[in-house]
Length: 166
Image (cartoon, rainbow, N blue to C red):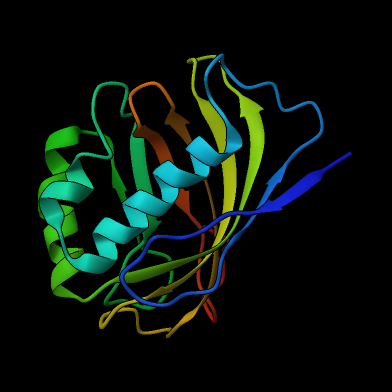
């Protein structure tokens, strides 16, 4: 059985509430709720959308593994892939300069992972000045550390009009 609930999004703009679902058998670490996971993801989006690079970086920390997303400014298959915390500051400064915006549409909690975090899948709308393929729905997945309130893993798929056969 998949359970569905709606959660609020606390962005400064008026946005529709994303849906939150929990996969069957999604065992979460003690003290971690689906709402906590969705809140971490929503908070990260809020920081991006507000252009607050310092706040964005607070969503990453000890336990960070990687962040990947289709690159802006090119058509095709280029992916920005970061695996060191010190790469995140310059990357997000560039994304903020490009007026990146992300609107969370859906979060699906898929369960706890072997690192003590929680895995999730997302669907978002992603826009930025340099995303040549335009606005569109983008799938993604990741993992968060509920206790620390941080993102461990983040991977976005291709947006509208971009083949996802990397």
